[in-house]
Structure formats: structure tokens, C-alpha cells
Amino acid sequence: MKWLGILEILLVVAGFLLVYAAERYSLTFLVTPGIFLVGVGILVGGAEVLLRREVAFRVGEEQGSPGETFRGAAAVLWGVFFLVLGVGVLVFAAARPLGLEAAVGDFLKERPGAAILVGSLGSLGLGSALSLGSAEERSSLWAVVGSLPRRLFGIVLILLALVGVAVGLLEIVAPATFDRLLEAALGSLPRAPE
Image (cartoon, rainbow, N blue to C red; front, side):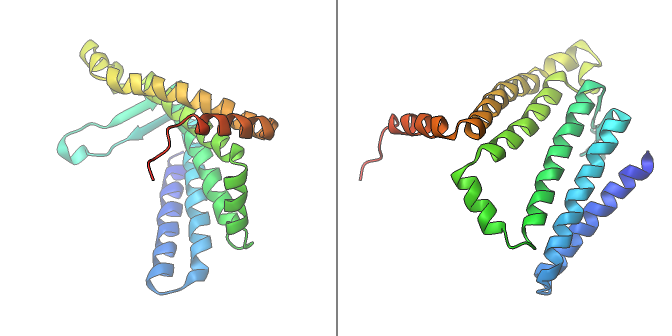
């Protein structure tokens, strides 16, 4: 499974290098393959997390921080978050060569339900992983107490994500009702003085 992690890193780095080269040397034809490689790399990372049921973040090790390791359900939720993110990047990459960037943007402005739903599902996975906590946060009573603010943030994120899922589904299933509710909510806001 270690090869999946290496593949993920190689794909993401190669993708960013292609996008950089496209911008630096005006090689615009490299942007879409670069974005595509980043999306595939994120998907591979999500798949690796789901297969291993463990994900480790080692940012800041040089300062003596051991990082964090998520196992079991928390790791699976991180994997779901990465998969949703990877699919979003791939959809964006697919829209570019088809000349659908503007059309997709206009559609999402007009009917944002799918974007709300995908973003909310990703946030639900992230909030759930944060609320479950890392292995290091469960190592002692003090670690559990110290992780309470982040766990509470995770719970708030879960609640907001559930509202987002409901709103996204409402917009997809009943767009007229969504529009009416949105107009009523925005109409009740105070107007800025002109």
C-alpha cells in the first residue's frame, strides 16, 4: 500500500508542475492535464486511506510536533472527504477542454444544489473525522481535554453539513420551493443604506 502513497504524491506534484509550467511559459494546453493529475492524485490518496483505514498528517514534525494519525472510522471519513474533493477537481478538469467552464459556472449559479450537496458531504466527512479525533488526541485525559475545541468545531461542522445536505437535496428535488424559500430569507434581511 505504500506505493499508493508514493503514486498520490507523484501525481499531485506532476499536476502542479504542469500547471506551473503552463502559467510560467504560456503553455495553456498543459493546464487541463495538470488539473486532471491533481484530481487523480487526490482520488488515489482517498482510496489509499479507505484501504488502509489510517491516515497520518505529519505537518510540523521539524518543530517537534508528532503530527496526527486517524484510524478506523475517522480515517474512513477522511478518505471520503478526499474522494469528494478529487471528484470535484476532476469535474472541473473535464469541463475545461469541452469549453463548458462558463456553462457549468452559469448552471451552478442558477441551480447550486449539486455543488451544495457535494460540498456538504465533504464537510460532513471532515466534521465527523474532527469530532472523532486522532489517535494522539485519545492518548490521555489531557489530550482529550485539549482536543475538545476541535471536536466541538467538528460537531458544529457536522450540523452545518447536515443542513447543507438538506438544502442541496431540496434545491435538486424541488427547485421552485428552494427559490421561494431563498427569496423569503433574503427578503427578510435588512437592506444596506444607499
